[in-house]
Length: 512
Ligand code: NAD
Image (cartoon, rainbow, N blue to C red; front, side, top):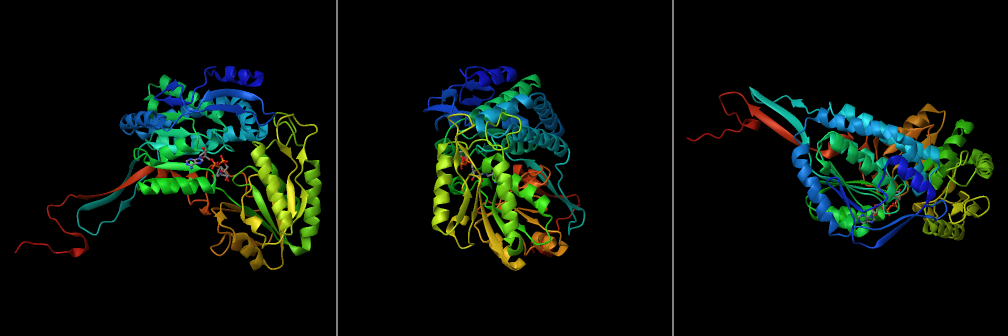
């Protein structure tokens, strides 16, 4: 067995018998194909177990459906208490969970700690929200009538998550869903099942302590076929899916065919504009963190840099210098800033994109594989910068690796036009000291993305704001602000406390 994983498992109190399905608090084995979970750090085997099949979906959905009947009746602040206790348990296990995320998904320890902190933050947010599930009172046009809106629990919610944020995105959805009175079926990425199993086990423990119906939270580890079976299941009132645009299209089609609700958080093709008035030192730090963090495998990774012609050469030289100084290697080591790509397929996709970019006139800097001073078996790359024209078709694609396309502009309107000229619309940024440019970027005629930042890179959002994007990114909003409304259904109530029956719009309907 794997020494580091065994140690983390002991610290988290996880069973050595790893199974793919947890329905109503009971872990049970599945009979699908054998899944080998490899660490991207060195391709060492962490665990091996059969994953779920489509038939296993019935069990987890039934558990969530049955628990919903009770959970929806529990007062929301009491549901919040459950989430508060989950947040405390996450605090207690922060270090161990971060170690597991690093081992399983390869992000550096600082980022893994940040991911656990994000779960804790969203728990706190959801606890507060549990006392604020407000509806409106609306002025009625009829005398002695009360017109109100109430928010009710929606039903069992399915959460499909991606490998690069193996647990935070689950927490964004689940903590809000739980306080809203919903129950959850989680299908994590089959590339990162162990982090999911650890979180589910923590939730199971709190549910048991608090005597809460165990089926409020369920897990099923499977592939795209299981994801599709979940999307097709009419008992799931909302399917919240995070991942590639390709996956989102398939999920959206399946859910729409049953007229269900979906919440989509899909790929990005995020850009930053650097204008002549920008503070270059600040911009440089924002650019490098956003472009190479998580080895370019964040949905909000900076993929396109649109720089004013007058400073493009200078900025490029500074970025290249910083790229040379990046320490790339084992993400468990202090001081390492860039870990491995998730697998060889990701590195092949990066190589291919660089070849295509070059064929389309791009000048490539970096992007080579690194084999020295890194653990054997993992795939390590030097982040790449490609000087390229805005017309090169490759810049339209999200290659999930650290490739930054650099384009030059002369006029601010041109920069905005390059910025918005892609099909995705997740995160964006401008580096400028000119208030008019900053305001213009955030205005209706500026960035067309769900996230538009000024003097902050596109990556690394706080949980308090609604998170998500437009266009091919799917339009969903999760996490903060009023995202909770996606997890509830709204009922408009008209109560007549008069003795008459006046009709709306003054309609007369009397028997003669
Ligand atoms: P992916 O699309 O390959 O997989 C994501 C999840 O969807 C996995 O659980 C997978 O099993 C499941 N899935 C795949 N095909 C499916 C199908 N046909 N039906 C149902 N489920 C299916 O993505 P990935 O490689 O794990 O993650 C990287 C992608 O996710 C990138 O495009 C990234 O931008 C995106 N992402 C977006 C956000 C966001 O909030 N917008 C956050 C994280 C990642």
